[in-house]
Image (cartoon, rainbow, N blue to C red; front, side, top):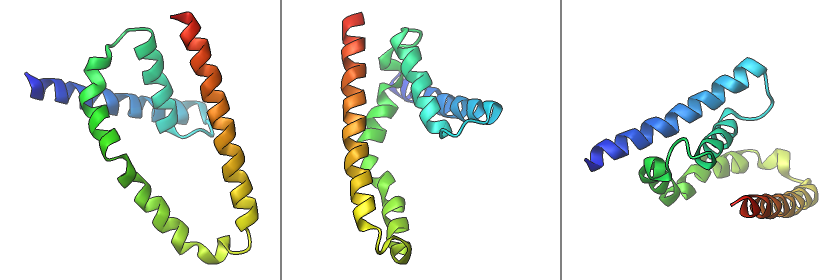
Length: 117
């Protein structure tokens, strides 16, 4: 029975990833399809159309190995050293501002959803 749950979990997550990519292509959006898929699965979970337990096995596995997904980006930064050299100040400012902005937005969204429950 547990293998069946894992399979359903993988299928649901891949389905929402593909759905996000489809929405991106159909509406020609500048947002990555994976982000759209995450928003869609969040909305479906919030509306309780699917239960958290249905996606939890795969999501837990992906979160466990999340750091491995950053390796290609790190390698890409190293290969672009000449391009990035001299722009360190701008990059640090952008990183700090975007970090605080995303934390602020996350906090506001959390408060909105907390009030609704």
